[in-house]
Amino acid sequence: MAFLTDRKRAVGWGAAKSGTEHFWAMKKSSVALLVLIPFFVFTFGSVLGSSFEEVQAYYARPFPAIIAALTLIVGFKHFNDGFQTLIEDYVHGIWEKVLILGMTCISYGAAAIGVFAIAKMAL
Image (cartoon, rainbow, N blue to C red; front, side, top):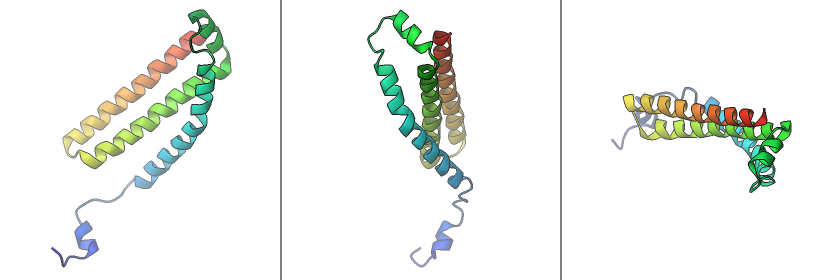
């Protein structure tokens, strides 16, 4: 085994395929969250501890509602991509596909529920 070349050791491990696309998707969502999270903290922090009516009136304005919705969407997309990387690295076989599909459904479902809640509060 010690006399194998690097190429021979790599044979059978599969191709990188879409690794670069996935890397750039994670970078783009990281940069987007780098901008969105401070906006979300300042917009959400200003109504923290207020009554329901005040929060509802605040999120009826477009800027806080859009910031909250974008933060939810980009955050759950980033979470899904990161969890997919974790599964691809440590789980193999049929469970890999099952877990990726399940986590994708859960993260997109949670994002949809959050956006629906913000829309319902804003309207």
